[in-house]
Amino acid sequence: MQALAKRRAAALTATAVAVAGCVAATEMAPKPSPVQAVEILAQRFNFTPDEIKVKKGVPVDLELTTLDRLHGFNVPGLGLRAEIVPGQTTHVKFTPDKTGRFLFHCDIFCGEGHEDMDAAIIVEE
Image (cartoon, rainbow, N blue to C red; front, side, top):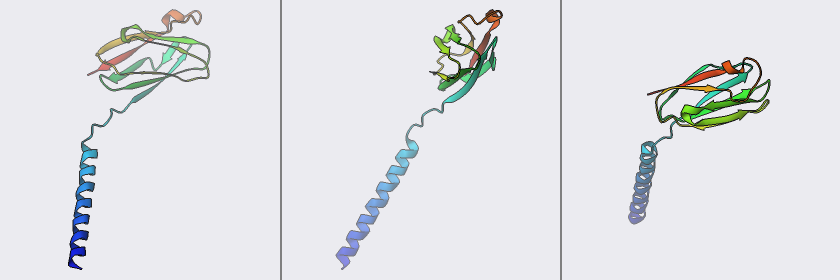
């Protein structure tokens, strides 16, 4: 009877140590950076918002939409390019690796005023 009690106690101790180890390992595991989602509306002849602030090293998901017509999205300084199709959400995912102010513009002609359709992404430390 005592041998059985000792085996049970040993098994319970081993289980408790294993559970504690798993909890500690989970808490110590690197957590992925949260993704910063930013909604951008393109319309004749502007982007809303016209200035976006993001953090260097933090993943970003730009959610681009338009209601009026096909627009382009071009950020030469960050090497980003996409087409924004009416009724759809276009996702542009990236992780900024440098700081600065990066202008973006519509690169698909959308009528008179098209040349003023620009905005900026500001990447901060």
